[in-house]
Image (cartoon, rainbow, N blue to C red):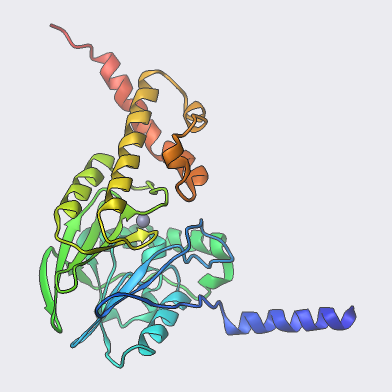
Amino acid sequence: MKRLLALLALIAVHATAAGFDYALAPRQIAPDTWVLEGAQEDFSFANGGRIVNTAFVVTDAGVVVIDSGPSRQYGEQTVAAIARITDQPIVKVWITHHHPDHFLGNQAFAPKTLGALARTLTDIETDGKAFNENMFRLVGDAMRDTEVVVPTEALVAGIIEIGGHRFELLALDGHTAGDLAVLDHTTGVLFAGDLVFHDRTPTTPHATIARWLDSLDVLEARPFKHIVPGHGPVAADAGPIRQTRDYLKWLDGLLTQSAAAGLDMTEVMRLPLPKIFRQLAVIDAEFPRSVSHLYPAAEEGALHVSSHPVTH
Ligand SMILES: [Zn+2]
């Protein structure tokens, strides 16, 4: 028994020294295009925050990375995974929005390669540190030595040609105040960031649902062949966009109706969910969270309506 404990202690020390292994296995989804798929789970010590999809495109003029992931170690392991596939240097790292699972790997990349929408830069400056501290609480040692790095380049909407790939940057919002989506016209791959969730409940801590729905319309109208959602499986049609739209519309309607009926927040959290949404990953955690994020505004709206009766 003593020897076993000693052995276990040794293994534990070893695991700590080696760091957290994300076991990143890039999957090719289109010419020059790989995705690192995250788990359909909440943040945990076991997944190290790897619940997000990141991606990279190997062009003739270097590698373009979409999102750097949840931690320094994830970023470093992404760099290593890319080096196993190509000798090309990483020339761009485009961050889709300021949520921690998407940008806390920034440290692993050369600062001059990092870019995001101007609003995202500001929001990382404002919220980044608190997000980072919270991630340490949620996923533990996988976050070791992770620090916030604010991207240097402010991206603007438009076309960028890199090494034979024609990228279109779409400056949108709604999931947050700044949501970047990237369409590679050369391959037809649309990197949607968290504007699109697939088989997973959308998260709403910084959401404006009306704006988000507008952004989904913009995405659906783009000529893509593959869509990489921020979370959930890659798809070859607009299914994930429609799924995200259906959920957001239902959620918005439910909150408005509940507020009009005078329900309090805990009552709304306990409402039965339609079967179609009960199948979404992490619904039991995310639905109550969304109620807490969005219900105060819905109640405010209901109050406003009732205190300003329409007169004819
Ligand atoms: Zn997000």
